[in-house]
Amino acid sequence: MFKTLSGILVAISILFSACSQQEPAPVNDNASVSVADSGPVRTSPGLAASDSEGYTTQDAVTQDADQQIYNSRHTAITEAVKKVSPATVSITVTEVRQGGRRLAFDEFYNRFFFAPTEREFSSMGSGFIISEDGLVVTNEHVADKNAQKIMISLTDGTQYEAEILGADELADLALLKIKADRKFPYVEFGDSDEVMVGEWSLAIGNPFGLFEAAQPSVTVGVVSAVNRDFRPDPNQPRVYLNMIQTDAAINRGNSGGPLVNSAGEVIGVNTFIFTGGTSSGFVGLGFAIPSNRVEKIIDQLASTGEVSMAYNPGMETTEMTYQLVRKYNLPQVPGLLVTSVNKDGPAFECGIVPGDIILKVGDERVQSQMHLKALFREYAEGDTMRIELLRKGQRYEANMALRPKAEE
Image 1: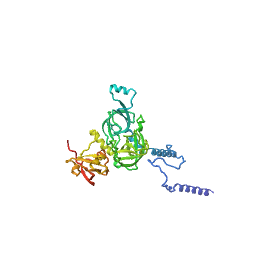
Image 2: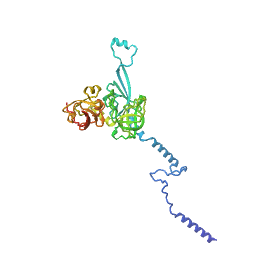
Image 3: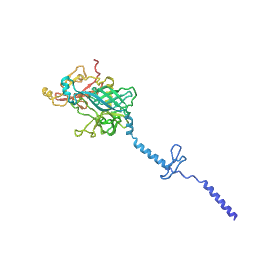
Image 4: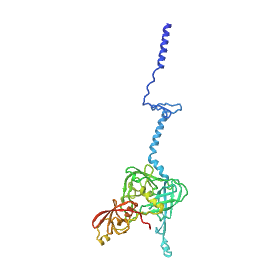
């Protein structure tokens, strides 16, 4: 019996020894593992696995969900708003104009003292800071040279007076300078030639002047179209070329504010909306002056306070009126009549003569004198301008080489 018991014990000992020397089980490649930098081990939901510091699987799941929520909220759009909003400003302009609503005693007062009736008018718009020292871009119809006082409100609640460095009615742009010795947040321009139809666009500003705290309002849409031209209104001196169209809501008070892409770059200046004559509100057709044109205009406003061409085309023109057509038996076509040509200028050199009718500059059909002036601004000295003309019933093209304006 003793021998039998000894044999059993030996067998058990061998069995335990064999178990302790087994090959390790293969690792499942799909299973989560933990290394020094990879975070906690993940197990099936519902299991309360924990590490030495008490970090559970449920903690990992919660952290995952929080991260997903954070990522869904902090998008390119919100980051662009965060980047541009501090440099977006509200502009309050005060003007003194003749006329206005008369009081009961005005007629009596004017009869004896010959005093003109003057009233103060206030209006609001938007703008954005483009330099650390406080240069502000806005529309000319927001702040023009008749402004008596201009106040700039920043998003931090501070207010400063500003002065006009220059304004251009034709381009509908103005450049202001904040009167303060401090550093300001500012935005950067993007390349409007690279704007894509369908990409995100953000209109930022102060619609209807509602927000006294100067926190800007943000509307989001897409770029609906580019290179939109508008037939000039003969009653208005402004000409809008190559405009960016967006469906981001733009309302009164947004004028002058930035149109921004998802990278936080200014691609245009919000300027006007089109209502189709059926509504006074926004119907999804907003338009912004492209940033490349804005930069070109404000560079001149910053240096000289006005915009001028570096070349002189060397000709004078007039609009084709009904009376002019009848008097000189001219063809009834839209365009401009050349009335005189300087023999020392580019127009003469390319063969243009008095009596020619300018139909197009480049691919643009000329609508008015102001339109022609705006089209001329698209060219610089050294460029060649292609002009389509009508002479004695025949169409032809002239290529006008633009040389620098002679020193006066």
